[in-house]
Length: 421
Image 1 (cartoon, rainbow, N blue to C red):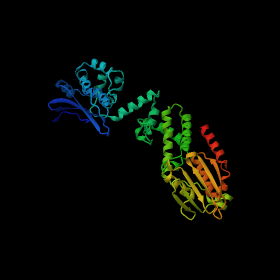
Image 2: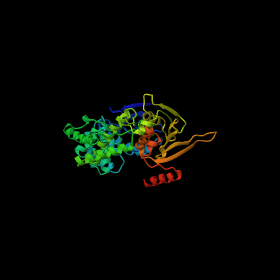
Image 3: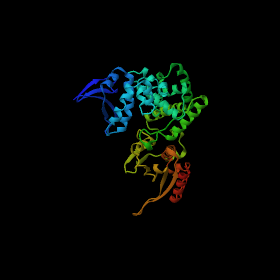
Image 4: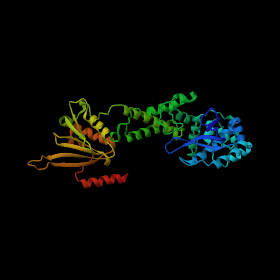
C-alpha cells in the first residue's frame, strides 16, 4: 500500500510517500532499457519530512545529491539506499556551512538547482545554501540548458560577448549548436537587434547569387557538399572581415544559417535542368541532340525518356538517380540505342565510362565497342558530363576531361588521385 504524504507543485521534485507504514522519498530519474522512466525510493524519518515540508532549498539540495546515485543504478540496477540515507542528516539537518562542505566532496546535479533558480555565481563559489535563497518550485529548464552550453564553451576556451550571444540566439543555436538554424529576431535583446541585422546583411551580400545544388547520388533531400563548403567559406571570410570581434561560434552560426536556407531552397525546388536553352546550343548539340534515351541502374531497373515528353532528359535522369541511388546501387547508365552510344556513371569511384559501338554484330557475332574512362570531380562534374552527352552524344564529351581507353592505366590514374587526397 502506497500513499502520497507530501508533494510539491513541480511533479519532478521528489515526493514523500508512506509505503507499508514506512516513510520513503520517491523520485523519478534515468530510464530503463526500454527508455521508460525509472522510479527509486529510499527510507526517511519524520525529522527529514519536517524539513522537506518547510524548506524548499534543502529539499532541492537533497534531490541534487541523490540524482547521481540514480544515474549509477543504470537501466536496471538497484539504488544504493545506504548511500542515499547517509545524505539525509548532513543535507537536511546540518548547519549551512556543513552542507557547503559536504557538497565540495560529493557528486551532485548542478543543472536541477540552476533550473530551479539557484544563484549560479554562488554555486560556483561553493556556497550552495546561499545560492538556494532564490530557489523556486517551478523550474526553468532553458536556464539550465544555457548554463550547460556556456560551460561547454568555456571548456573550449570560448567566451561570448553580447553580440556573439545575440547572434546565437537569433539563429536558435545559443543552447544547441547542432540545431538547424532559423531566424528568431524576437529572441534577441532589442538593443542588439540592429547590430545583429548588420552582421546578417553582411552574410547575405557575400553569398548573393550563390546556390547549393542538389546531390541526387545521396537521396531526395541531399545537397552538394562542395557548394555548401564554398558558400560557408565565402560567408565566413566576409563576416570576419567586416566584424573582426566576433568569436568563431558566432561566425559559424551565421554561415550555417545562410547555407541551411540555400539548401532548403534547393530541396523545395524541382530537380534542376542542366541543359542549355535552345538559343545557346552548339553545332554539335543541334546535330546530335538526343531524342530518346534509356536510363538504368545497377539493379536492372530501367526508365525511358523521349524528347516529346514534358520534362528534359537531364531532369528526368537525375530524378531517377535520386529515387534509386543507394549504398549498393551506385552505377547508372544512359543509353542512346539508336545511335549506339552511352555513358556509365560510377558514383562509388568518381568516374565515368563512355561507350561507343564501333561495329554492329552480324551473323551471330558480338558487337564491337570502344570504352573510354575519365575521372569525375564531384556531382558538378557529373552534371556537366550528363548534360554534354544529352546535347551532343559521346563526341560532345571530348572537351570535358581526359579519356583513357586502357582500363589498367585508368585504374592507376584513379589510385593516384585517391592517394593524393
